[in-house]
Image (cartoon, helix red, strand yellow):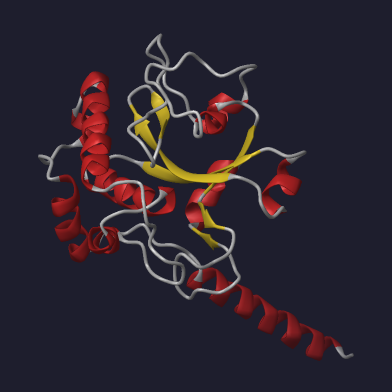
Amino acid sequence: MGKHKQHRILLLLSVIILVLGYLHNVPKKISHEDELALEHIFKTSNVVGDALSFEEQIEYIDLLLNELHRKFPLFSPIEYNAKREPKDLLANGSGLCYDYSRSIEKQLMLDGFKTRHVAVFRSKKNFWTTITSKGVLSHSLSEVQTKKGWMIIDSNEPFYAQDITGEVHSYKSLKDLEQAPNWKLPIHPDLAPFYKPEIEYVYGLYSRHGRFYPPYNFIPDYNFSELFYNF
């Protein structure tokens, strides 16, 4: 094979990778349609996240989570191969973690908070074995940047990772501990294993199967910029 032909093949492969990367990147922009749906989901007063004290930030996050789960019970999720934006959660009337986390993140972004999406897995042996194995229990949730640092916020119930001393925890900080902290809030036994150091996590990964966001194929759904939080 000649050098020119090799270069053309490499160029073609590079273009394909770039196109696939663009198509499968889950955007974080908030549309006018999102804003209208979020008003119905949360019905909270507008705030500016950076202008709040830490205590006010916690109070507001707690209010959002309780308002969401009061109206939208943990029940029937949005089907695969369908969007799960705020308007879709509103239309479905219920959901699971991967449905709720999207609306939580968009509302917090609308309020001026920085957020990052997290996929968490109950560990099997090591990182690659865990995230590539079928049947591994997983959870989809979020982190929000508070004035004390990044804090995990659950999607399935009104729980956020603040311990009894008032410190907040991200998955990066939790992974470095020898044991789980004494949390300020109770956590359901089914969710508790996702809040221990013995987990694996990936920032920016929305699904391993690619069927939560267009174009709905086998390539994982992710946000490219959030993947850099893993390093």
